[in-house]
Amino acid sequence: GGSASASTIKQVKLERESELRIEVCNETPLKLRLNGSAEIFGSELAPEMWLTFPPRLKFAVFTWYGATIEMDGATETDYTADETPMVSYVNVHAVLEGRRNRAKALSPNDSEASQGPRVIVVGPTDSGKSTLSRMLLSWAAKQGWKPTFVDLDIGQGSITVPGCIAATPIELPIDPVEGIPLEMPLVYFYGHTTPSNNVDLYKTLVNELAQMLETQFARNAESRAAGMVINTMGWIEGTGYELLLHAIDTFKANVVLVLGQEKLFSMLKAVAKSKPNVDVVKLQKSGGVVSRNAKYRQKSRGYRIREYFYGLANDLSPHSNIANFSDLLVYRIGGGPQAPRSALPIGADPIANPLRVTPVNIDRDLLHMVLAVSYAKEPDQILSRFVVLS
Ligand code: ADP
Image (cartoon, rainbow, N blue to C red; front, side):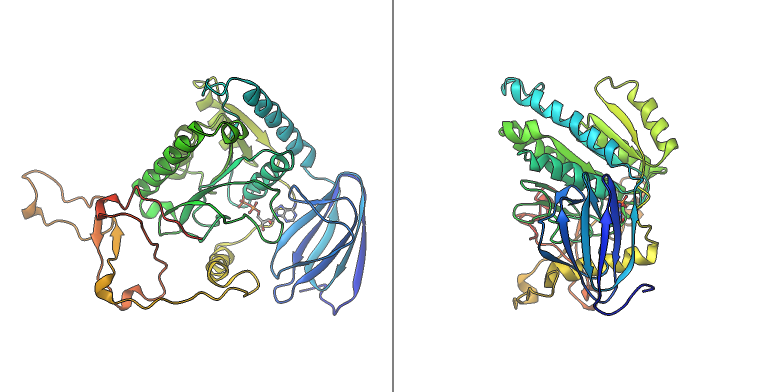
Protein backbone atom coordinates (compact mmCIF):
# COMPACT_ATOMS: atom_id res chain seq x y z
CA GLY A 1 0.00 0.00 0.00
CA GLY A 2 0.95 3.61 -0.66
CA SER A 3 0.83 5.04 2.81
CA ALA A 4 2.15 1.87 4.43
CA SER A 5 4.73 2.54 7.07
CA ALA A 6 5.80 0.67 10.15
CA SER A 7 4.06 1.09 13.46
CA THR A 8 3.64 4.81 13.84
CA ILE A 9 0.58 6.20 15.50
CA LYS A 10 -1.42 8.57 13.39
CA GLN A 11 -3.99 10.88 14.93
CA VAL A 12 -7.03 12.19 13.04
CA LYS A 13 -9.45 14.77 14.31
CA LEU A 14 -12.99 14.35 12.98
CA GLU A 15 -15.43 17.25 12.86
CA ARG A 16 -19.10 16.63 13.53
CA GLU A 17 -20.96 14.68 10.84
CA SER A 18 -17.84 13.56 9.08
CA GLU A 19 -16.14 10.20 8.66
CA LEU A 20 -12.73 8.62 8.41
CA ARG A 21 -12.69 6.09 5.56
CA ILE A 22 -10.22 3.29 5.92
CA GLU A 23 -9.05 0.37 3.82
CA VAL A 24 -6.92 -1.83 6.02
CA CYS A 25 -3.69 -3.06 4.46
CA ASN A 26 -3.85 -6.44 2.67
CA GLU A 27 -1.39 -8.21 4.94
CA THR A 28 -1.51 -6.73 8.41
CA PRO A 29 -4.27 -5.71 10.80
CA LEU A 30 -4.87 -2.16 11.96
CA LYS A 31 -5.30 -0.96 15.51
CA LEU A 32 -7.57 1.95 16.19
CA ARG A 33 -8.55 3.93 19.26
CA LEU A 34 -11.40 6.37 19.64
CA ASN A 35 -11.70 9.43 21.76
CA GLY A 36 -15.20 10.91 21.84
CA SER A 37 -18.14 9.18 20.24
CA ALA A 38 -18.29 7.57 16.83
CA GLU A 39 -19.81 4.60 15.08
CA ILE A 40 -18.92 2.12 12.38
CA PHE A 41 -21.87 1.47 10.06
CA GLY A 42 -24.40 2.20 12.81
CA SER A 43 -22.62 0.42 15.63
CA GLU A 44 -21.11 2.56 18.36
CA LEU A 45 -17.44 2.11 19.14
CA ALA A 46 -16.15 1.66 22.65
CA PRO A 47 -14.01 4.70 23.49
CA GLU A 48 -10.46 4.70 24.90
CA MET A 49 -9.76 1.12 23.83
CA TRP A 50 -7.47 -0.20 21.14
CA LEU A 51 -9.57 -2.19 18.68
CA THR A 52 -8.06 -4.46 16.02
CA PHE A 53 -9.36 -4.57 12.47
CA PRO A 54 -8.34 -7.46 10.21
CA PRO A 55 -6.52 -7.10 6.88
CA ARG A 56 -8.55 -5.98 3.84
CA LEU A 57 -11.48 -4.62 5.87
CA LYS A 58 -13.02 -1.46 4.38
CA PHE A 59 -15.00 0.74 6.69
CA ALA A 60 -15.72 4.24 7.89
CA VAL A 61 -15.69 5.68 11.39
CA PHE A 62 -18.47 8.25 11.45
CA THR A 63 -19.07 10.80 14.17
CA TRP A 64 -22.22 12.83 14.81
CA TYR A 65 -20.60 15.20 17.30
CA GLY A 66 -16.85 15.07 16.70
CA ALA A 67 -14.11 12.65 17.75
CA THR A 68 -10.42 11.95 17.63
CA ILE A 69 -9.14 8.70 16.15
CA GLU A 70 -5.72 7.15 16.60
CA MET A 71 -4.48 4.52 14.16
CA ASP A 72 -1.57 2.19 14.72
CA GLY A 73 -0.50 0.20 11.68
CA ALA A 74 -0.53 0.42 7.91
CA THR A 75 -3.53 1.15 5.72
CA GLU A 76 -4.12 0.94 1.97
CA THR A 77 -5.87 4.30 2.25
CA ASP A 78 -7.34 6.49 4.92
CA TYR A 79 -8.94 9.87 4.42
CA THR A 80 -11.64 11.99 5.97
CA ALA A 81 -14.84 13.01 4.23
CA ASP A 82 -17.34 15.57 5.42
CA GLU A 83 -19.88 14.89 2.68
CA THR A 84 -21.80 11.75 3.56
CA PRO A 85 -25.42 10.66 3.09
CA MET A 86 -25.64 9.73 6.79
CA VAL A 87 -28.28 12.34 7.67
CA SER A 88 -30.63 11.00 4.99
CA TYR A 89 -29.96 7.43 6.17
CA VAL A 90 -30.72 8.25 9.78
CA ASN A 91 -33.90 10.03 8.67
CA VAL A 92 -35.03 6.80 7.04
CA HIS A 93 -34.30 5.06 10.31
CA ALA A 94 -36.48 7.60 12.16
CA VAL A 95 -39.40 6.93 9.82
CA LEU A 96 -38.99 3.16 10.27
CA GLU A 97 -38.84 3.68 14.02
CA GLY A 98 -42.18 5.48 13.90
CA ARG A 99 -43.72 2.58 12.02
CA ARG A 100 -42.34 0.05 14.50
CA ASN A 101 -43.81 1.99 17.40
CA ARG A 102 -47.16 2.18 15.66
CA ALA A 103 -47.10 -1.54 14.90
CA LYS A 104 -46.24 -2.33 18.50
CA ALA A 105 -49.03 -0.14 19.86
CA LEU A 106 -51.63 -1.87 17.75
CA SER A 107 -53.32 -5.08 18.73
CA PRO A 108 -51.05 -8.06 18.18
CA ASN A 109 -54.16 -9.95 17.12
CA ASP A 110 -54.42 -7.78 14.05
CA SER A 111 -51.55 -9.37 12.17
CA GLU A 112 -51.75 -6.82 9.36
CA ALA A 113 -51.63 -3.65 11.45
CA SER A 114 -49.10 -4.99 13.95
CA GLN A 115 -46.62 -5.69 11.16
CA GLY A 116 -43.62 -3.34 11.31
CA PRO A 117 -41.70 -2.09 8.28
CA ARG A 118 -40.39 -4.58 5.76
CA VAL A 119 -37.54 -2.78 4.10
CA ILE A 120 -35.78 -4.00 0.98
CA VAL A 121 -32.51 -2.39 -0.11
CA VAL A 122 -31.83 -2.48 -3.85
CA GLY A 123 -29.23 -1.03 -6.23
CA PRO A 124 -26.31 -1.99 -8.46
CA THR A 125 -23.23 -3.78 -7.12
CA ASP A 126 -21.10 -1.61 -4.92
CA SER A 127 -23.75 0.94 -4.13
CA GLY A 128 -23.53 0.32 -0.40
CA LYS A 129 -26.56 -1.96 0.03
CA SER A 130 -25.05 -4.26 2.64
CA THR A 131 -23.66 -1.27 4.49
CA LEU A 132 -27.00 0.55 4.61
CA SER A 133 -28.78 -2.66 5.69
CA ARG A 134 -26.28 -3.00 8.48
CA MET A 135 -26.78 0.58 9.68
CA LEU A 136 -30.56 0.29 9.73
CA LEU A 137 -30.33 -2.98 11.68
CA SER A 138 -27.79 -1.68 14.18
CA TRP A 139 -29.67 1.55 14.85
CA ALA A 140 -32.88 -0.43 15.39
CA ALA A 141 -31.14 -2.95 17.67
CA LYS A 142 -29.63 -0.09 19.67
CA GLN A 143 -33.17 1.05 20.44
CA GLY A 144 -34.12 -2.38 21.69
CA TRP A 145 -35.79 -3.86 18.59
CA LYS A 146 -34.98 -7.26 17.20
CA PRO A 147 -35.35 -6.79 13.45
CA THR A 148 -34.84 -9.70 11.12
CA PHE A 149 -32.05 -9.47 8.61
CA VAL A 150 -32.66 -11.26 5.32
CA ASP A 151 -29.72 -11.59 2.96
CA LEU A 152 -30.62 -12.61 -0.58
CA ASP A 153 -27.16 -11.88 -1.95
CA ILE A 154 -25.71 -15.28 -2.79
CA GLY A 155 -22.45 -13.79 -4.07
CA GLN A 156 -21.41 -11.42 -1.28
CA GLY A 157 -23.85 -12.20 1.50
CA SER A 158 -22.89 -11.37 5.05
CA ILE A 159 -24.66 -14.09 7.03
CA THR A 160 -22.94 -17.30 6.05
CA VAL A 161 -20.93 -18.90 3.21
CA PRO A 162 -21.42 -17.70 -0.37
CA GLY A 163 -24.05 -19.63 -2.30
CA CYS A 164 -26.77 -19.34 0.36
CA ILE A 165 -29.69 -17.13 1.15
CA ALA A 166 -30.32 -16.66 4.84
CA ALA A 167 -32.12 -14.79 7.59
CA THR A 168 -31.34 -14.09 11.22
CA PRO A 169 -32.68 -11.91 14.01
CA ILE A 170 -30.40 -9.00 14.99
CA GLU A 171 -30.58 -8.46 18.72
CA LEU A 172 -27.57 -6.20 19.24
CA PRO A 173 -25.81 -3.62 17.07
CA ILE A 174 -23.64 -5.53 14.61
CA ASP A 175 -20.01 -5.85 15.65
CA PRO A 176 -17.87 -4.03 13.06
CA VAL A 177 -15.25 -6.80 13.10
CA GLU A 178 -17.17 -9.98 13.87
CA GLY A 179 -20.12 -9.13 11.63
CA ILE A 180 -23.52 -10.79 11.79
CA PRO A 181 -23.90 -13.18 14.76
CA LEU A 182 -24.42 -16.77 13.72
CA GLU A 183 -26.41 -18.16 16.62
CA MET A 184 -29.64 -19.02 14.89
CA PRO A 185 -29.63 -18.31 11.20
CA LEU A 186 -32.13 -19.80 8.82
CA VAL A 187 -30.09 -20.86 5.80
CA TYR A 188 -31.09 -22.17 2.39
CA PHE A 189 -28.35 -23.57 0.25
CA TYR A 190 -28.41 -22.60 -3.40
CA GLY A 191 -24.95 -23.85 -4.29
CA HIS A 192 -23.90 -21.35 -6.97
CA THR A 193 -22.75 -17.76 -6.76
CA THR A 194 -25.05 -16.43 -9.44
CA PRO A 195 -28.81 -16.93 -9.66
CA SER A 196 -28.72 -17.24 -13.46
CA ASN A 197 -27.41 -20.78 -13.01
CA ASN A 198 -30.87 -21.85 -11.89
CA VAL A 199 -33.38 -19.03 -11.59
CA ASP A 200 -36.25 -21.36 -10.65
CA LEU A 201 -34.30 -22.84 -7.79
CA TYR A 202 -33.36 -19.37 -6.54
CA LYS A 203 -37.00 -18.29 -6.59
CA THR A 204 -38.10 -21.49 -4.88
CA LEU A 205 -35.64 -20.95 -2.05
CA VAL A 206 -36.70 -17.31 -1.68
CA ASN A 207 -40.30 -18.52 -1.40
CA GLU A 208 -39.35 -21.14 1.18
CA LEU A 209 -37.43 -18.64 3.29
CA ALA A 210 -40.25 -16.08 3.13
CA GLN A 211 -42.82 -18.68 4.15
CA MET A 212 -40.71 -19.83 7.06
CA LEU A 213 -40.32 -16.24 8.31
CA GLU A 214 -44.03 -15.64 7.87
CA THR A 215 -44.69 -18.61 10.17
CA GLN A 216 -42.25 -17.28 12.77
CA PHE A 217 -43.70 -13.77 12.59
CA ALA A 218 -47.21 -15.09 13.04
CA ARG A 219 -46.37 -16.27 16.54
CA ASN A 220 -43.94 -13.55 17.55
CA ALA A 221 -45.43 -10.06 17.91
CA GLU A 222 -42.06 -8.62 18.93
CA SER A 223 -40.23 -9.58 15.77
CA ARG A 224 -43.27 -8.76 13.68
CA ALA A 225 -43.28 -5.16 14.96
CA ALA A 226 -39.52 -4.83 14.48
CA GLY A 227 -39.92 -5.88 10.84
CA MET A 228 -37.16 -6.85 8.47
CA VAL A 229 -34.34 -5.45 6.43
CA ILE A 230 -33.70 -7.33 3.21
CA ASN A 231 -30.40 -7.02 1.36
CA THR A 232 -30.40 -7.96 -2.33
CA MET A 233 -27.99 -8.73 -5.14
CA GLY A 234 -26.47 -6.11 -7.41
CA TRP A 235 -27.99 -7.76 -10.47
CA ILE A 236 -30.68 -5.29 -11.52
CA GLU A 237 -31.06 -5.86 -15.28
CA GLY A 238 -33.35 -8.31 -17.07
CA THR A 239 -33.81 -11.44 -14.99
CA GLY A 240 -32.07 -9.70 -12.09
CA TYR A 241 -34.77 -7.03 -12.13
CA GLU A 242 -37.50 -9.69 -12.24
CA LEU A 243 -35.92 -11.35 -9.23
CA LEU A 244 -36.06 -8.02 -7.37
CA LEU A 245 -39.78 -7.70 -8.12
CA HIS A 246 -40.22 -11.30 -7.04
CA ALA A 247 -38.46 -10.59 -3.73
CA ILE A 248 -40.51 -7.44 -3.11
CA ASP A 249 -43.74 -9.41 -3.61
CA THR A 250 -42.65 -12.55 -1.80
CA PHE A 251 -41.53 -10.77 1.35
CA LYS A 252 -44.40 -8.26 1.12
CA ALA A 253 -41.87 -5.43 1.34
CA ASN A 254 -43.48 -2.07 2.05
CA VAL A 255 -40.40 0.14 1.88
CA VAL A 256 -38.05 -0.09 -1.09
CA LEU A 257 -34.79 1.82 -0.69
CA VAL A 258 -33.06 2.40 -4.01
CA LEU A 259 -29.38 3.25 -3.82
CA GLY A 260 -27.55 5.15 -6.51
CA GLN A 261 -29.54 4.41 -9.64
CA GLU A 262 -32.08 6.75 -11.16
CA LYS A 263 -33.34 4.26 -13.75
CA LEU A 264 -34.03 1.50 -11.26
CA PHE A 265 -35.74 4.01 -8.99
CA SER A 266 -38.13 5.22 -11.70
CA MET A 267 -38.89 1.67 -12.83
CA LEU A 268 -39.76 0.57 -9.31
CA LYS A 269 -41.67 3.77 -8.66
CA ALA A 270 -43.84 3.01 -11.71
CA VAL A 271 -44.45 -0.55 -10.52
CA ALA A 272 -45.40 0.71 -7.06
CA LYS A 273 -48.18 2.88 -8.50
CA SER A 274 -50.37 -0.21 -8.48
CA LYS A 275 -49.28 -1.07 -4.92
CA PRO A 276 -50.53 1.65 -2.57
CA ASN A 277 -48.76 0.14 0.44
CA VAL A 278 -45.29 0.22 -1.03
CA ASP A 279 -43.07 3.29 -0.62
CA VAL A 280 -40.16 3.60 -3.01
CA VAL A 281 -37.43 5.91 -1.73
CA LYS A 282 -34.32 7.06 -3.55
CA LEU A 283 -31.17 7.43 -1.51
CA GLN A 284 -27.76 8.77 -2.35
CA LYS A 285 -24.88 6.34 -2.60
CA SER A 286 -22.02 7.13 -0.23
CA GLY A 287 -18.80 8.33 -1.86
CA GLY A 288 -16.99 5.99 0.50
CA VAL A 289 -18.30 2.75 -1.00
CA VAL A 290 -15.36 0.87 -2.42
CA SER A 291 -15.81 -0.67 -5.88
CA ARG A 292 -14.75 -4.24 -6.15
CA ASN A 293 -14.16 -5.83 -9.54
CA ALA A 294 -15.21 -9.38 -10.44
CA LYS A 295 -11.81 -10.78 -9.58
CA TYR A 296 -11.78 -9.09 -6.19
CA ARG A 297 -15.27 -10.37 -5.47
CA GLN A 298 -14.27 -13.89 -6.38
CA LYS A 299 -11.28 -13.63 -4.09
CA SER A 300 -13.36 -12.33 -1.21
CA ARG A 301 -15.78 -15.25 -1.66
CA GLY A 302 -12.77 -17.49 -1.18
CA TYR A 303 -11.87 -15.62 2.01
CA ARG A 304 -15.47 -15.90 3.25
CA ILE A 305 -15.43 -19.66 2.78
CA ARG A 306 -12.10 -19.89 4.56
CA GLU A 307 -13.38 -17.69 7.37
CA TYR A 308 -16.45 -19.90 7.72
CA PHE A 309 -14.32 -22.96 8.41
CA TYR A 310 -11.29 -21.45 10.14
CA GLY A 311 -12.61 -18.26 11.76
CA LEU A 312 -11.72 -14.65 11.12
CA ALA A 313 -8.37 -14.90 12.90
CA ASN A 314 -7.72 -18.55 12.03
CA ASP A 315 -8.96 -19.38 15.51
CA LEU A 316 -11.33 -22.22 14.62
CA SER A 317 -10.23 -25.71 13.77
CA PRO A 318 -12.86 -27.60 11.84
CA HIS A 319 -12.96 -31.22 12.90
CA SER A 320 -13.24 -33.90 10.29
CA ASN A 321 -15.64 -36.80 10.36
CA ILE A 322 -14.83 -40.00 8.56
CA ALA A 323 -17.73 -41.66 6.79
CA ASN A 324 -18.11 -44.39 4.20
CA PHE A 325 -19.17 -43.32 0.75
CA SER A 326 -21.98 -45.83 1.11
CA ASP A 327 -23.36 -43.94 4.12
CA LEU A 328 -23.63 -40.66 2.27
CA LEU A 329 -26.12 -39.67 -0.35
CA VAL A 330 -25.20 -36.67 -2.46
CA TYR A 331 -27.79 -34.90 -4.60
CA ARG A 332 -27.77 -32.11 -7.09
CA ILE A 333 -30.77 -29.91 -7.81
CA GLY A 334 -31.42 -29.18 -11.47
CA GLY A 335 -28.82 -29.51 -14.19
CA GLY A 336 -28.94 -33.30 -14.19
CA PRO A 337 -29.00 -35.34 -17.38
CA GLN A 338 -32.08 -34.77 -19.46
CA ALA A 339 -34.54 -37.55 -20.12
CA PRO A 340 -34.14 -38.94 -23.63
CA ARG A 341 -36.94 -37.97 -25.99
CA SER A 342 -37.94 -41.64 -26.29
CA ALA A 343 -38.78 -41.71 -22.60
CA LEU A 344 -41.15 -38.76 -22.78
CA PRO A 345 -44.79 -38.55 -23.79
CA ILE A 346 -45.20 -37.85 -27.49
CA GLY A 347 -44.80 -34.16 -28.26
CA ALA A 348 -43.09 -33.25 -24.98
CA ASP A 349 -39.74 -31.48 -25.15
CA PRO A 350 -36.85 -32.87 -23.16
CA ILE A 351 -36.42 -29.76 -21.02
CA ALA A 352 -34.45 -30.39 -17.86
CA ASN A 353 -36.58 -29.81 -14.80
CA PRO A 354 -34.69 -27.08 -12.89
CA LEU A 355 -35.98 -28.40 -9.58
CA ARG A 356 -35.31 -32.06 -10.20
CA VAL A 357 -33.25 -33.71 -7.50
CA THR A 358 -30.73 -36.13 -8.98
CA PRO A 359 -28.23 -38.38 -7.22
CA VAL A 360 -24.56 -37.55 -7.76
CA ASN A 361 -21.71 -40.03 -7.82
CA ILE A 362 -19.08 -39.46 -5.21
CA ASP A 363 -15.86 -39.08 -7.16
CA ARG A 364 -13.01 -36.68 -7.82
CA ASP A 365 -15.39 -34.13 -9.33
CA LEU A 366 -16.60 -33.36 -5.82
CA LEU A 367 -13.15 -32.28 -4.64
CA HIS A 368 -13.05 -28.67 -3.36
CA MET A 369 -16.80 -28.25 -3.56
CA VAL A 370 -18.91 -26.89 -0.76
CA LEU A 371 -21.90 -29.12 -0.05
CA ALA A 372 -24.62 -28.59 2.52
CA VAL A 373 -26.16 -31.05 4.94
CA SER A 374 -29.93 -31.41 4.61
CA TYR A 375 -32.37 -32.59 7.23
CA ALA A 376 -34.65 -34.03 4.57
CA LYS A 377 -35.74 -37.61 5.13
CA GLU A 378 -36.45 -38.15 1.46
CA PRO A 379 -34.79 -36.60 -1.59
CA ASP A 380 -37.99 -34.83 -2.63
CA GLN A 381 -37.97 -32.90 0.64
CA ILE A 382 -34.53 -31.43 0.06
CA LEU A 383 -35.90 -28.20 -1.40
CA SER A 384 -38.10 -27.42 1.55
CA ARG A 385 -35.86 -28.58 4.37
CA PHE A 386 -33.56 -25.72 5.16
CA VAL A 387 -29.98 -26.26 6.05
CA VAL A 388 -28.43 -25.24 9.33
CA LEU A 389 -24.93 -24.05 8.64
CA SER A 390 -23.23 -22.48 11.59
P1 ADP B 1 -23.02 -3.52 -1.97
O1 ADP B 1 -23.71 -4.30 -0.90
O2 ADP B 1 -23.93 -2.54 -2.66
O3 ADP B 1 -22.29 -4.36 -2.97
P2 ADP B 1 -21.29 -2.74 0.20
O4 ADP B 1 -22.21 -2.13 1.19
O5 ADP B 1 -20.87 -4.15 0.45
O6 ADP B 1 -21.89 -2.60 -1.28
O7 ADP B 1 -20.01 -1.79 0.09
C1 ADP B 1 -18.87 -2.15 -0.68
C2 ADP B 1 -17.61 -1.97 0.15
O8 ADP B 1 -17.44 -0.60 0.50
C3 ADP B 1 -17.63 -2.74 1.46
O9 ADP B 1 -16.36 -3.30 1.66
C4 ADP B 1 -17.93 -1.69 2.51
O10 ADP B 1 -17.40 -2.02 3.76
C5 ADP B 1 -17.25 -0.47 1.91
N1 ADP B 1 -17.87 0.80 2.33
C6 ADP B 1 -19.18 1.13 2.27
N2 ADP B 1 -19.39 2.38 2.72
C7 ADP B 1 -18.16 2.86 3.07
C8 ADP B 1 -17.68 4.13 3.60
N3 ADP B 1 -18.51 5.13 3.85
N4 ADP B 1 -16.36 4.24 3.83
C9 ADP B 1 -15.50 3.24 3.56
N5 ADP B 1 -15.87 2.05 3.05
C10 ADP B 1 -17.18 1.86 2.81
